[in-house]
Amino acid sequence: MKPGAAQNQAHGPAPGQAITREMRAWVSAQLAGGHSPDEIHRALVDAGWQAAAASQALGLPVDGATPSPPVAVPVVTPDAGGAMVDTGDKWVEVREHREAPDLWVFSNLLSPAECTALMDAAAPRLERSRTVDTQTGGEELNHDRTSHGMFYTRGETEVVSRIEARIARLLNWPVQNGEGLQVLRYRRGAEYKPHYDYFDPGEPGTAKILQRGGQRVASLIMYLQEPEAGGATVFPDIGLKVRPQRGSAVFFSYPRAHPVSLTLHGGEPVRAGEKWIATKWLREREFT
Image (cartoon, rainbow, N blue to C red):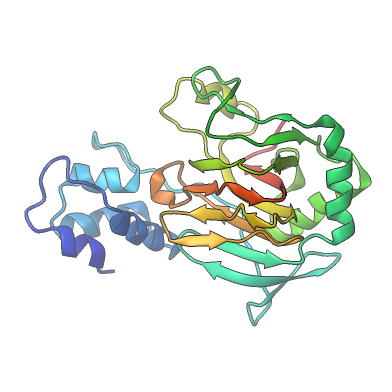
């Protein structure tokens, strides 16, 4: 394993050396390829990086503590050709796959009737969207998120149960390890600025949040209605833009709750029409 990005930047490294996007992409690719944090750390140090800077690049403690392995995450298992995934009640088409992070774009995950059913039942219950307050473990209004939304409880309706079972098969992850489906409506001008879905381990309220099922380890965003213009899901760290298409979805996992996961993402402002999505967050353990 040769740390190409690291080697190119390792001439005269100094304490506090910046961790660049290129470096994070290289580290994430090594993790996705099965290399352990110890192996990656040694490769960086051999390339000339300070041990503390190498630890920072991996999202590890810088006090000499033994690195802990990444947590298990949901995994997609496509057919031999890599173009389709068996979800039990239907085959879903793979539109795109990235390895760093492990990201998949699917077509036809939901039927038009399922999209309509989720929106119709959600509409009377929509409220201004909130975000998790990692200072207290509660919720708060956030000016970065201007959508309206609601949560279904797991198995709340027959349609929700069917979709949850399909997601569990798609991602090889237990139904009980998922939060309830969240439906969001973005009207003209509404957006969600780039953010991470995991809970920041450094924030005081995170310990309380993790009591309900551990850390978030993956996200699935399903498009229920595409806007007339705008509203793409963007991943700035990898230069990817996913345009909403009814019934399609984008999935990505993050084995480390750290920017090295390359899962920074956001929803661009809707310029015309409305965008509706349903989001499924997956936890390490059973979500209660």
